[in-house]
Image (cartoon, rainbow, N blue to C red; front, side):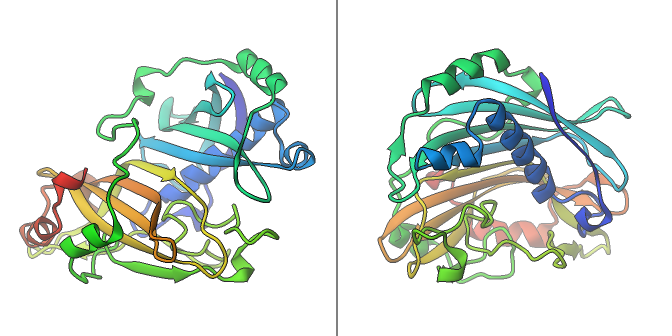
Length: 312
C-alpha cells in the first residue's frame, strides 16, 4: 500500500475519554483519500474543470487501538474496486513506532454534477490509474458488527419518530434538528462538502477552538465511564439544500452486555426523504482502569427503551 499521509496527534485532538477523538481518525483518512484521488486525476481542480464534484458516499471505520498525544500516525491505502460510478478504497492508519494498527477505513466515492448533484461517470483514465494502486481488503479491515451491504432505506420519519420518545440525555440518540442556512451552502445552494458528515450534517463543523467529544458518566458504584467507538459507518443518500430542515433520530438496533449498536437516521423534513444514516458500535469503557465494563444497570434500562432491532 502507498503511504499517503503522516501526522502527529495534537493535544487539541484528545477528547474527554483521554484519547484521540474519532473525528480525527476520519480527518486523516479523508486527507489520505484526497491525496490518492489527486494521483488518479480527481483532485478538486480537475473535477471542477469537468463541472463535477467528488463526494464520499459511504465511509466505514473500524477502530483498533487508542492513540494519544505525540503519536505519529501514518496512513497507507489503495483502491479495492474501481467502476464507472464508484471507487471503493481501503486505508490503514498505523502507529509504526508501536507496530500497531490504529484504525482501518473502507471509503466509497463517486462523481456528481456540481450544479445538480446528478451522478456522473468516473473518467476512464482515472479508472485505469486506479489499477496501479489496487489493494485487497485484509482480514483486520473487514467489519466485525456493521454490515456493509445496502442498509434498510424504506423507513419514514413518521415510523421512526412514533417509536421514540423525546429523550435528549443520551448523545447517540438525542433528537437534533437543523435548518440549512445559506452560509453553510456552496454557490449552488447545496450543503457544503466541508460540513460535518459524521453526524449526518445535523451538527455544523466545529470551529478550530471548539473541543467536541463524547460525554462521560459515573456509575452508581462511582466508576467513571464513557462510550468508546469500535466501528462507525456513515452513508450519504442525498445532499440537503438551503432552506430545508433536517432532523436526526437515534435508536439502538443491537444491545449486548458491554456493547451498543446505535443507528441515527437523518431525514429531510422538507422533502420527507431519508438523506443519510450513521451507525456507531461502542463499548462501555472504564476511564480509570482503561478496560471494558458491563453496561451499568441504570444506563442499560434507558437503552432498552430505545432498542428497536426490527429497524436494523
